[in-house]
Length: 230
Image (cartoon, rainbow, N blue to C red):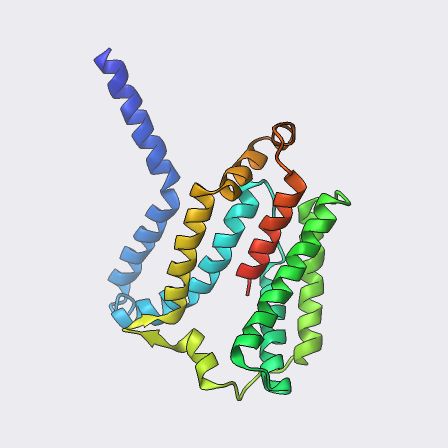
């Protein structure tokens, strides 16, 4: 009996290690690169060239967690993020809107595209891969139209500090990421939003029979990731 319990414990440990395999790969890469180049392991390089750019991807990944958990997919995240950013920035530069309003406009653009994706997926029943691949192209094209394929400059320092600034040595994007992670962790584990996402992903038909408004919650998930894209 003890041998059986021991075997189950070892198997559980092995499964947990496999679940963390990506983390182990990252750690191995970090060790190897640090050994090859001492500059890589410097505090400045890790903060400015690793953590700060990664925060943007991580913020989008938080929103993607809800979509993937519900067995959805969104390929348009990069293009919609670029479009929302371009429209938000141009509203500040060309129309003189305050920074907070420019940010709000960008968030609204992301939410609208998320709702659009959800409508096509839930009402017209087009697979998420096809829908979001189409909006990927639409978002990329509209970004070129609005931005004129040119770099923007002359942004207020307070706006640029959101991406380049630091607070007590911690990059502001990292602080935003931590806040969003805490909020999303709570939503995913302590509210019906997360429970329903997992239920829909496990068995959508069973979720419908159980009384979950699947289409409504899928719309919430795609709006949620649309906001995170910005």
